[in-house]
Image 1 (cartoon, rainbow, N blue to C red):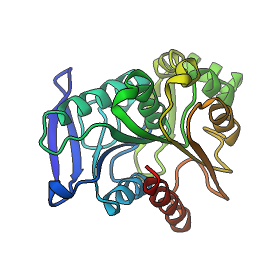
Image 2 (cartoon, one colour):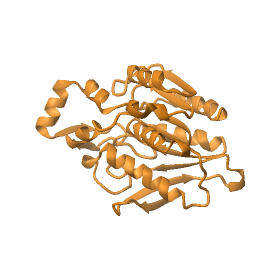
Image 3 (tube, helix red, strand yellow):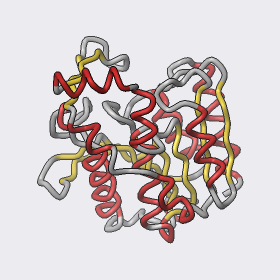
Length: 257
């Protein structure tokens, strides 16, 4: 079921709900969040949500504002701050629905990963478990990946322009302000709050949020944790075998919650 809600700025957010038919049978609730320039129907986002659905959870997917999905805003204005505030607003809206259940599970990819993890750090009592997949760990580590030359060019031009791999024909143009905003965030600062079960998954060919970053986060996590590495997978999972492997990891992990 697809519906539209409004965020704190009065912008439309389009939400995709996969609800358990009989709410008395609902075993849990999961919010699933895409990454920078992503959208709720991406294959990996669907795989995360589908795993929860198969295990009797209702799931909530949504397009943030300032992405290439159905919600309001322009991708060029995308920031970690705006993605995070949209997550907060979706959860606040969900709290008023009859299917809302707390504590809930959070899963996100890349920038959605850091947003879900930041929410879990800020509201640990509300979060049953956390799955930040191919996650950004901090703005500082992101800067190291981009490198000084690429960052200098981005800052000088004011934009980074590249084609969308998920939506061929779409050109993604992102302001330098995005990187300045990202530098405000670091999961390691309050990582001690992440005492709930945490699932990390990353491709061994991920150059955006590499395995080395996940190991830094994994080593600092204080609670029950798993780290899975998908062979020959890049940052965004599109290969059918990779998607199947990831879904199976999710299914086994959900059984432990």
